[in-house]
Length: 455
Ligand SMILES: *Cc1c(COP(=O)(O)O)cnc(C)c1O
Image (cartoon, rainbow, N blue to C red):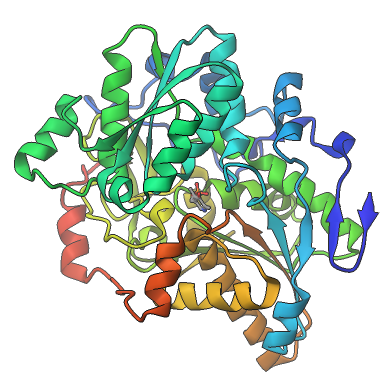
């Protein structure tokens, strides 16, 4: 261990040996996924056509700890795990807050976000099970980048469906995936029936994560040697991300600090689950009074304005239905810069924890969020991803509340990624060109009307 007032760094042997699975500790069993045809609870068997067998086992497992394979630990080491945990002293000074602010750095690996934490084990399990090719979708491109990197490390071919708006706005993300050897198509595409359906209606359709999921799944099930990989929302993905929080727990102890607030941004919920669930484990056992704060965009307000209901995970209505907070799978996510947060639903385990009051959520406009990003860059020197700036904004709000109340609380947030390929968001903020979006009740009712009435 090396320790200063500013950061802690773990040694390679302190890399976690197990994943932590919150399904072991939830207050109730998760409501089962429903079959998209019959709307009845389904067995996990059909998932084997899509996902790695090991991932399907983990998806339904209630085993508390799941061993991390040695090859996966090696790949984590190669890509910079364990990651450092920093104290944001200059941000504290700027805010003149008595609060102590800490953040976990998931931005430092070659893909630039937390997503390799699950891309690596998924690629490894697929390789071990003999998969030749993977398909996936990507919104802003971080997931596609992470899986392209992991597929390169484990010698698997990868096809990525990237939402057309990002494909055009973020050409360097596409290039990065291609550098790692992946093939990348703008979605909706003519390569699938699902994509063609949307292109027929609108030849310049901007696409959405939900549509890209439908395309990647169709490409998978129509090709024998091909399987599929998902970067968020599902239990096994959140379980893989638990390396973040397990490391952070040890590191906070090294700082002699115990977080009063644990903060993160939520798109599907995986990075925040990764940081928070190892701490939530203590709370669920009555051993911690920490508060958990999840930040989402006002433009896609799943947990702050949506309903806790069964809904499809994709726009094309092909996936099982999951019980989650949703704004409806037909919701047209506005084109905000935080592309990783443009998803209609959230992870079922996190939604249960929010519904039962173990976690709360807040929502911000993109101007508020990018303003916080500028403050963070100008104090701590780090250009955070627009997604991560939701966590920065929530942290700043909590720190200012501490200032008003004169409370020296400890705040820990997840820096889920860097923003060096998102400079357009910063450029638009600096140029006063950022548009704020917020759905009204009519828009939400319209998208919710497509959600089946079950559960
Ligand atoms: C994908 C992404 C997110 C949102 O996804 P979660 O599953 O909620 O973590 C947040 N931050 C960054 C940097 C991302 O790439």
